[in-house]
Image 1 (cartoon, one colour):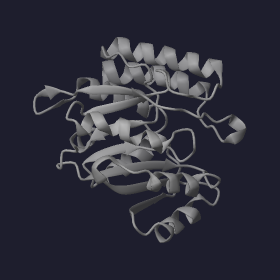
Image 2 (cartoon, helix red, strand yellow):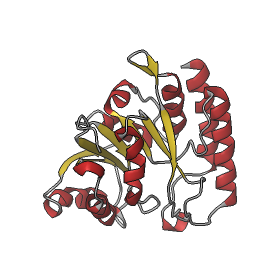
Image 3 (tube, rainbow, N blue to C red):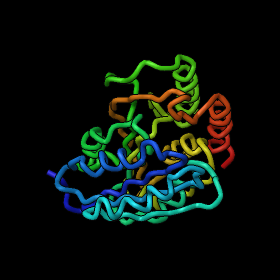
Length: 245
């Protein structure tokens, strides 16, 4: 049974040049039932897209009138971290999840991502693409880079994640309110991890869970954006936010 102190899920979606997938992804998010009848709030952040993303985004509230939308249109491209920072500032839900605007991640995984928080076992839940769930076989070097940066992050934070770079991260509202995101691009993933590893709420360290999720990765031809430069930047940010920030 869902603890009724949790009534609404805020779904924060950073978006950049996703005219091909955005409407279908949002439709799938809205169609996904949530445990205990949690309400949904969608906060979409257009990061100065150069295609028709903003036009499509503006049409969504009329196509899905049963769900509350908040739309943010940035006129300067700043990156995923800045988009999440702006989206997190607008949340009104009790739980927050990050959703990419493509089909790499499946909203059907929401119930198991939410359950540890609903059961009062966790304050933060990470998905993992590497612990048993189906996933598309993709780039070896991407996976190796992910394992390296995850291992380095684990050494400096003393938590044993298997997939630090995963999109699907779930937080209670109290955790999100304490996050002060500084990274603009994909450095936001190690930044969040470093900060939650030492964050305390009501004097206690956060309870962090991890659960397997499915993954249908994209090729670069299909719109994948993260590259090897982001892996190098992640190493810098891991050290920066654990030792210097």
